Amino acid sequence: METAEKKRSSGAYYARIVGTLAAITTIVAVLLALVNLITAPTIARLAAEKKARAMEEVMPGCAFTPETPPQDVDGILDFQLAKAGEETKGYCVQVETNGFGGAMQLMVGVDAEGQVTGVTILSHGETLNTDKHGELLARYPGSSGQVQLAKDGGDIEAISGATVTSRAVTRGVNSALAAVQAYTEGGDRA
Image 1 (cartoon, one colour):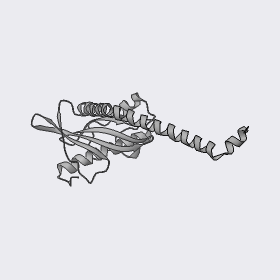
Image 2: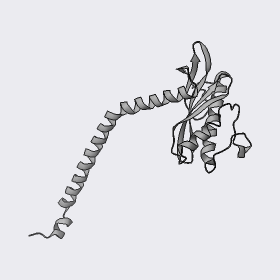
Image 3: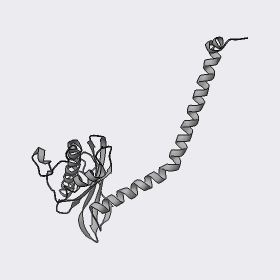
Image 4: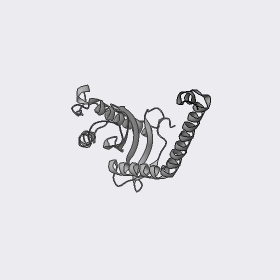
């Protein structure tokens, strides 16, 4: 009769363990792929709905048409022309910037005169609570040109304890304003 120690030291024992782990890993990978396949359309639909709500929030009452963004502005994910009837009211610019918690995606509305109409956060990894986000985002409408925080010589007050997040939002707003300016001046398109 073999002892448990001899069984564990045999190659067949290790082959069985490796085979079992490989089978479990394969099954889990197939299940994850299946779940992804099933949920991907729902996730895409929800993301599109969230984006549409964000555009409506920053440029209310407009119809949106995708445009090719200027290629000389970093962080632009999407660029949409906002119209009411035949009149161009402004632009919705989806930007990505880096905050304290990593990548942050914003939707920035800019009117035809180059002023921010609104800013909303699409995704983020920041620790700042929702009330503070709203408080920060409400400080940008009416801004134009190069926006800066007060502690950097500008007019926008940063949220206390969230300077990195405030700077990230400011960078995103500046990217959107630069993209609109480049677009209206006929800059190179991607």
